[in-house]
Structure formats: structure tokens, C-alpha cells
Length: 76
Image 1 (tube, rainbow, N blue to C red):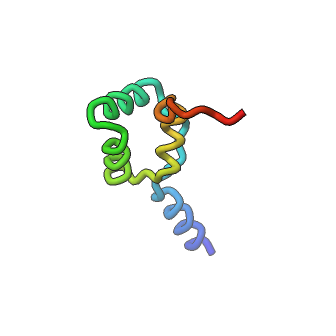
Image 2 (cartoon, helix red, strand yellow):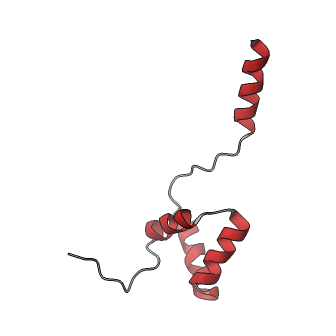
Image 3 (cartoon, rainbow, N blue to C red):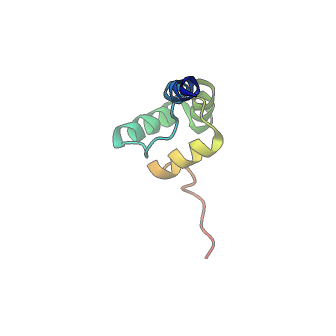
């Protein structure tokens, strides 16, 4: 029983946690600079390939940083 507990604790400690708080101002500035230099599509593709982010993650980051969808009007 003790071995199972130790193995479980070690397994949980070895798992990388992907839950993070919102991006900082500096991180948002880096994202904006990348988008300005390479374009939104290329920046998204790079993030998915190199950082393992999903499209939902990207949309959350963009929403938090105030990026994209600027030209769209909201329904009232």
C-alpha cells in the first residue's frame, strides 16, 4: 500500500502542469510583436507546432491580450 502511494505521488509530481494564469503584459507584447512581424496565421501555426497549444488556448490568449477579431462587430 505504501509503494502505491509513493508511486502515485511521484507520478503526479513528474507531470508537467499546463494550467497557467493569464499571460503577463510582457508576454502579450511578445505575442503582438510576433504577429506584427510574421502575421496572425504564421504566429498561430508556430505556437501550435512548437508550444503544443490548442486552438482554444490560442483564442484564450488572444482574447486576454486583446488581439484579433478587431474588425468584427458583436451582435446586440
